Amino acid sequence: MIPEETKKLFLDKFSSIGNDKFYKFLLNYAVNRIITGEEETPKTKSKAKIVGVSPEMELMDYYEKFLFLYRKEGEEAYLEVAKLFRKAGHEVYRIMIKKNITKKNDRFLNVVE
Image (cartoon, rainbow, N blue to C red):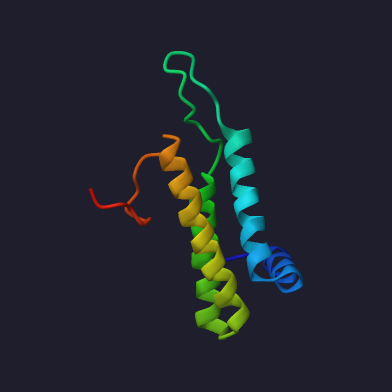
């Protein structure tokens, strides 16, 4: 469940700036987490470690929580916020796959090869 202050923070941000800017806010947050959370391994020179929950998984967790709130309370704002979290989560996942920061995950949309 989402803490009340976190839910209020996201809903206030969403209602004050709108869909597009909220989506860009989520992308910016996640990309900054990727940049600051990467550690370059000396042997392979690849960036792979992110401390804590990875940004794309964090966004998807919020998606599920807001979708649950929408189903429970029926407020449309929860559904809109949930959709934006999911959209941002998939975009961040695609960025991370391209940069070889994460492995393929069945929870996300993947290109058929």
